[in-house]
Length: 335
Image (cartoon, rainbow, N blue to C red):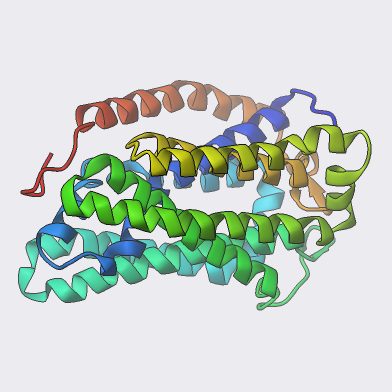
């Protein structure tokens, strides 16, 4: 597999970066929602929610950039992928709305707080599961006829997509628990350490299961991973996953606070790299490459200028927000 840098490749990497930024920044928010029923109503739930309250609002920016960038830079891929994945994508968007409403209204309507807590949890679980199902459905392949989607309404639903959906839920829960290790203290932090332990093993099992199944979805995947000389390079990804997993449990046992979260992000980065190995240069696997789907060069250049200005601004603002609220959440539930 060779990579030549041109406009289509640049936009593929920009969209991939936006998607990964969303996974990193919204993953632990969704993870906290997934774990929310494990916290006691009152100060514990308030502390968990306040640990992300200063930074969670801007996370969907990256989701919009990923989806909007796909539509603008690769319109043919957008026209094929969206009809194929309408159901999980609509489920994800509705769940994100419910989660946001639950997040805001639980403070403004204390009388119905149990209902808003349920909306926050359900929205987080459904959004994470729908994201995983969308990924699995894309990986397993989309039927393309001519220049459009040629499959049915339920083609996205398969054992593999259900596996990837469950895996994302578990992985996000791990991100949430390691985030709380960094941001809380006392009994709540102790609980987060325990949660991170069993969630770590569950996440590794999910990575192994998805990784074992993926090469057999398409013959092209198998060739990319196991054909010579590709295997000399691709073998480094599972090796690094094993090393990162070992370091994760060592740091968890040593009761380090930031390292488990950073190492979990590293595991997510490695799985994302594996996804890139499997798919690139296809945006619709085995059917449409990034060059087949690309918008005219003039359109891509025009958008690239805007992205070159706006993405650094977003990164600077986001980094500043995380720096300002870098401390722990106190027992009273505030930074």
